[in-house]
Image 1 (spheres, rainbow, N blue to C red):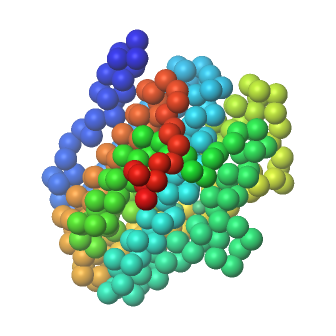
Image 2: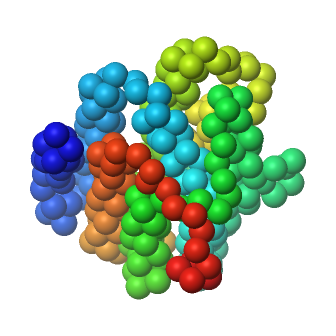
Length: 261
Ligand SMILES: [Fe+2]
Ligand SMILES: [Fe+2]
């Protein structure tokens, strides 16, 4: 059964055509949006087929909280790689500071982690998951070996993914609350987390990075490399969803200093 689910998911999630063949920047951007829309339509179908099993949705939420923890330092590293292009550096640094809670009472990760406590879901700060490890490794590689163009392409795609992903997670929260007879406070940290992101923050990240993609020549970027970075990022994000959807349970593992010094 697990094999069958995995096979179906792999077939549905396979990138249909290489983005390298998309000629212009508009065509690339249309393709990014189209594939991400299709991805989340499919995720919703898979979720409904899982009949909102509460353990599965608790797992989704834990993964997404861990993502908010691990995503911020990746953005910080992307900013460092953009140091030669002040406009890109400033935007990525703005994003990094926002995620890290600079000038705010707490980071977005802290807000999310404390927020899910409303559902009695506890996320251990030292927990990693195999799925998240693969996702961060893909971004690691781009950050270490990719050009700035590839980095901009990859982080642009991750910002386009952010809104539909947050919308899905918000649905998960309310379904989980309903299934477990819990309440999400409209003025609590959990709702605040979604409000901050869905009422402007993510759209702004996407628009600002999108400007560098669309006007790539003005910032000394290479369109082909932007596309390649974007393609790697989307595949990594699709694989992450594939992993968390198809894995039964116990995806997380305790922080091991030998593996993660
Ligand atoms: Fe955030
Ligand atoms: Fe963002």
